Length: 217
Image 1 (cartoon, one colour):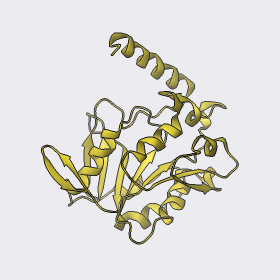
Image 2 (cartoon, rainbow, N blue to C red):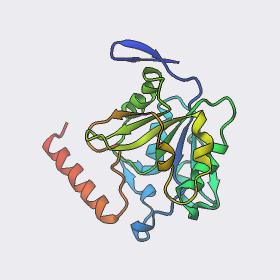
Image 3 (cartoon, rainbow, N blue to C red):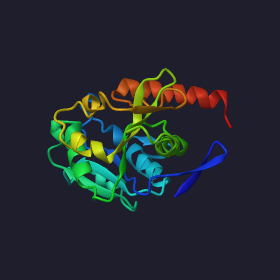
């Protein structure tokens, strides 16, 4: 599959599922499930799934063990849900379950946190296009204008085992040490703007309302 980039055409990797990590308990929200809060008229988790589907990809979502309300908000979407009964172990449990679900034909996977409400379809597309434009890397990662790495992040197959054998809640940060990482700069701080507390959500909504009021288009 090809896509235009900067006035030219580049070839995207043929097999690149998107793995949305959404099994965490969001304990800092003090009883509110942030992935069920509405953003742009839909629960955040459903919005993120729909965003991933714009890329024409195989979308897989790790979730807490059923029954859980997060399954309900995904009803009707062509996504694969992956139960993570050991989600309490941290994000590494989601990585293990998600990555081991991938078949041998998969050459790359995009990892996407479920709580980044400012991401756009163009952001995902930019990171995907970087794989073909910078084939010497093994990791392609969205970043802030200041160069801080965030999500989405794409990893090549040679790193699947390293990510799938992580433990605890640190994700794959240590795996990236020594790897060739290509950063894709996204506007503002949206590559890292995850909202983990009620106060963060209130501030985000206030800032968004102020922006809309200033530019009502």
